[in-house]
Image (cartoon, rainbow, N blue to C red):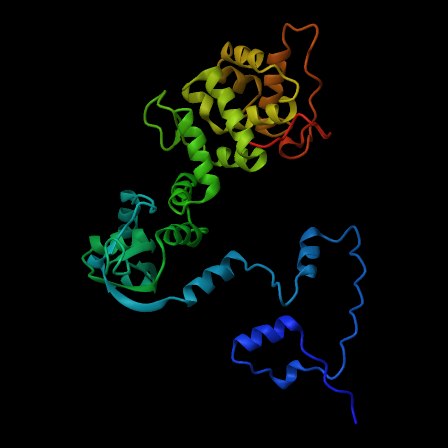
Length: 352
């Protein structure tokens, strides 16, 4: 006679009981499974991405690449021809570029080459029920409308929320020339926490992200620099750096370009625990942003990133005229964010 079966794991048994009380025989092993031999640690030279992949298991599969995720999303869609007059664009979509439509027409427009656009059907309880929001392919839809077509082949996604539509617009356009400004707008509509926090911090200072048409209107279009600032310094650093620029230069248009934002960020990461904020603001206010850019050699071949070169100029500006209490020498690689200057600083990086 063999040994009796080993009882199943209690959590598995509870789960199966909830499914009807049936425990398949293959979940009753005849003997305990021996403990797994731990794998030796990866050598120090193993690439980090390789270590991450090696650590993945069947229960925790590696994340899909953007291309794989794109295909996975579209596999859940149904395919059909949809009338163009039932399609509309919502606020997360980017504006249509008329010159692009005209260029597409001039390039011997071929209807069969349009491919499948991506639509989201609106459920009865939602605004514009029964219609289709254009998630991907807005230029193709407007082109087809312009040349007199009435239907287009589409992949239709059902039961999406407005925020999911906005996310999919941003995701499905990851390979196209959608601007950082368009993507930031989509992130706001999908209620991404970082984008919402950035917007609220700027609004409290009378600033906003957008396309500036007039000087001094508080509109910033250097979205990539703002994203880098938030990613590297968090909510607190984002607020402090923008407030420094605002105090020094107010709504001076040249102060809100990516190079200046990056430069003030690089300076503040290194010296926010040392610098006197009032002195920094007063020294910057006496210096035009154009002079800082010129002194940093922006636009000319030079060692170091544009942000670090501008940060060095700000350091020289701060120290000018000081015999004592000068800021310490510049550190090329201070560590990311508020780690600052390659050393632990108890005064840096607290809660927002």
